[in-house]
Length: 204
Image 1 (cartoon, rainbow, N blue to C red):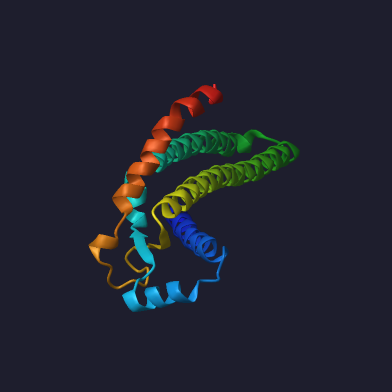
Image 2: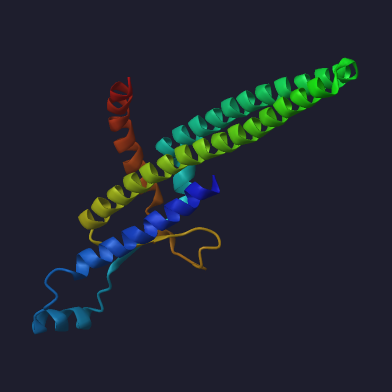
């Protein structure tokens, strides 16, 4: 599920851009006395970060969708294996009986088996595309949920910058006081639990 982790990093980055634009797209003219007060106080924009790995590990929406995708992949793999096993049996039967066939009969069976092999390869490709589409849909939903939540959360708490923090993210150190991961996970899970019954009813 590396794609989902990558999508979350993109979500958080776009949320940062959104909050930045939101903050600076309004009235940018600051009175001289207010600007002087800010400079004198040394006030800095409020900054926080979210650990995307921790978020994905604890976000119930993602856990549910990951389990669904894994189960879907297992089911499709079984379907493919059943078809492949049936074709292998046909090939084995042909090889056993080929000696008693005329040349034309053998060629006809070989051509039929070739077509079935091609169809099986196409079926496998279709299954892969289907799984990719389903994963893309989950990614899009994850993007919308996290992006919408962070936009409201950051605005309500006057955060001017929210970063994503993971190993290899380029951030070498971040003070724990800036970590809002647990709050974000809690808020996302609360929203998901409220929406889940309605989503389940509408899906029926």
